[in-house]
Amino acid sequence: MSASINEIQDEIIEEFELFDDWMQKYEHLIEMGKSLPIIDPFLKTDDRLIKGCQSKVWLATSKKNGLIEYTADSDAVISKGVIAMLIRVLNHHTPQEIVNADLYFIDRIGLKEHLSPNRSNGLVSMIRQMKLDAMALSN
Image (tube, rainbow, N blue to C red; front, side):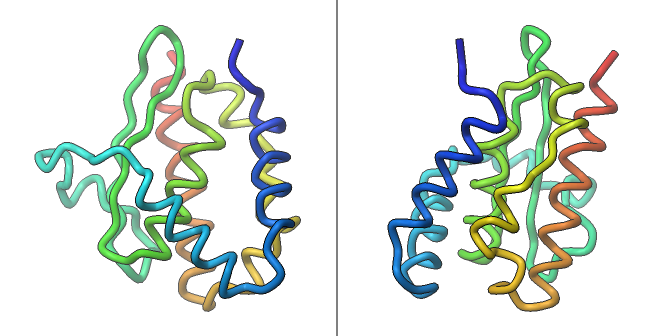
């Protein structure tokens, strides 16, 4: 049985507590981005770009065995880390679990306060798009 959305959020909160300052936390975020599975280049289309992101962030969503699978990429290292972290939390869950998820880890690790206003808006746009995609595949 895979970990629940909240269990994964708690893991991320614990990881971020290991770092003393935000420079280290950003490095961790960038490392997460590097672990993102490579998105198929043919999926990097304009219709998969997340609107509201300052940098380019592509999100591809599919459904396998009733569970949602995300792949993504970004042209900016921080944005790539943020989308990688969101994928880690939401990947391989049912559309219903994703739509209903309360992503409390974002506030608990202090992510929003440490992103520029544009990146913070991008974060909200990423979450919205991931939930919309999950909802669209819920039938």
